[in-house]
Length: 374
Image 1 (cartoon, rainbow, N blue to C red):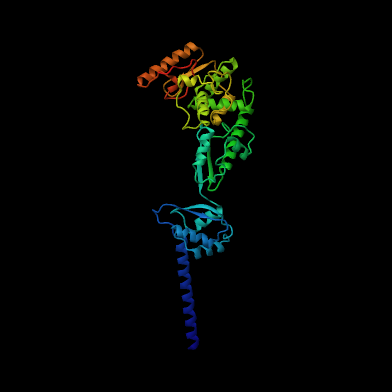
Image 2 (tube, rainbow, N blue to C red):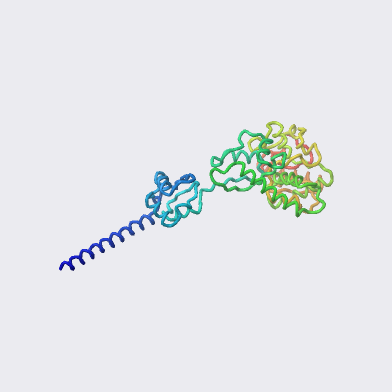
C-alpha cells in the first residue's frame, strides 16, 4: 500500500514536472516567436556601445519600445554561444523582427547603413556641402580651407575640383567625412587611370589631368549620355585646330570662383551676361586658348570614356535643338542656321531666346560669337 502510494506520488511529481516543462517550453517558444514590435508600429533605432553585454542590450531595446525580455535574451545568447559575438553599432528593429532574428543580426553586424549620393556634374564644393549636412557622419575637416583639407586627406593633388567621383556612398554612423572623401578620390583616380589606359591615339591631351579637365566640361555641356562622345569630339577637333573651346560652363565656373572663392549649385550663375563673357579669368575659354587650369565639375565615368575615346566627327560647333539634345555643325554657317532654328523653337514656347546662354533645355551652351544681352 505504501509502495503504491509512493509510486503515485512519484508519478504525480513526474507529471507535474512534465507539465511545467511543456508550459515552460511553450512560454519560451511564444516569447521567441513574438514580434518585437506590434504590426503597425514604426521601426525604432538603437545604439549598441562597444562592450555592451546581451542583458544590457535587451534593456536598451526594451526602453526604446521593443518587447524584449532582458533575462531571456541573455540566456538565449549564452545558450547559442553568441553572447560574446554581438557587434556594436546602430541597429534598426522592425515589426518583422523576433528575438532570434534580432540576435542573429547583432552577431552579423547588420547595422544601419546610410546613403549619400553625389550627382554627376556637381562641384567639389557641392560634395563638401553634402558631407557637412549629413548628421550621421563624424565631421573632422570643419573649418579647413582647400589647401589644408588636401593636406589633411594626404592627397597628391593641388586642387580638389574634379577629383571626387560622383557616386552613391554607403556608410555607417560615425564614419568620418575624411574616409568618404578619400574613397571618392581613390574611385576617381581608378576610373581616370582606366580611361587613360585605353585612350585613342593622337589625342590633344598630354596627361590624365587634361582628360579630367575636358571630361568635366563635357559633363556640364550635355545632359544626354548618348551625346557625350560627340561633344567630346567637337572639343578635341577645336583643340587640334588651336581654336578656343568657347564653352560657357567654364566661364560660369570662373565667374563664380572669382567673385565668391568657391563654386557650388547655389553660387554659380545660371546664365551669362555679355560682361561676364568678357571677364578675363583663367577659365574664360572665349578669351584663352586651350583647356582651363582645373576641372570645373565632377565628371562621370561615361564622360571620362567620352574624352579618351571621342566620336570621330568633323563638327566644330553645337547648339541646343530645343528638344533636349544638340545640333552639331561643321561650319559656322551651319551653326548659325542651327542657332536660328533653336531660337524659333524657343519663341514658340514663349521663352526669351535672344540669349543662347539662357537655354532652359540644356544650359550652358557653346557659342562661336559672344552673345548680347536682350
